[in-house]
Image (cartoon, rainbow, N blue to C red; front, side):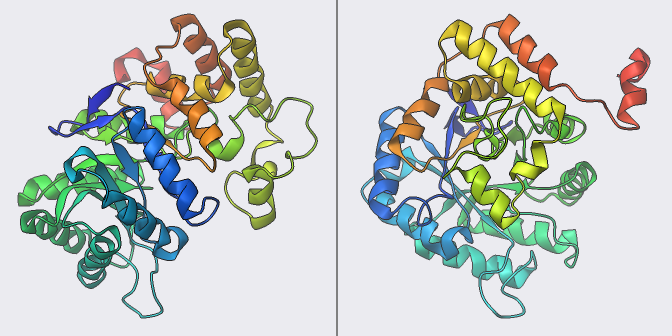
Length: 336
């Protein structure tokens, strides 16, 4: 496992991050702890969760495992924003919910600090100044070491960076966007802002819920039984079958992955992760797993440098037409 600095900070993290969203949902506590043990055995140091995953059970499961570890050997990231109770202030990015949220996460994790505390999404009901000033207070207090954002748009991220700079507040040091071979719109602005402002990028859903796992090929008429894609179709999640199967680009990407896999002997998910690891600005994709077998496969991407020709083939297969104004910018060299 190789290690990278998280953006322009001095915090080093493993190049793969273990996502704990499955803990308490698809993976029981025994399996979750086995996944954590194998991940750290392979050199992994970076684990991501959120206060809403399994209604807090994900943080609790992680916390009970953490008690058996040397705390400084593990970088723990969690998130706050969505509803954690029935009260009017049990959600959002207001000062009240942030202060209560960090205390609840610290209690569930059984630790005195959170290494990376991320806002899970934009909150249109709270002034951004209130959110950023409160996050700065949490860093000053020592309860949080670094802060980040997830699911922001480009202008929201840049505004947050500029406000923090103007007021001398702790800046965001990481962005957690949706980014994979099927979803590359983060490249239009989010990755540009992150590179320009020195934010680390930790993409979520790098295998798009199983679309890039190797289980789906051109010609399939329905999602494989028991897969997350099948579940997503039933529950209306973003990685559902109907969200991608009607786009020829989806099948072009899968064709390219299977072609490279057949030629190199590398597993399809390993190739998808290795492509992402090679993209400019990416720090550590967040890999989720329900089983040790899935995790073992994903760990194959660690220390792997994709052949430039294969990377170019996957990039070309996943290219998509740029919307305005990016199409104009791309056509004029003076604007790039």
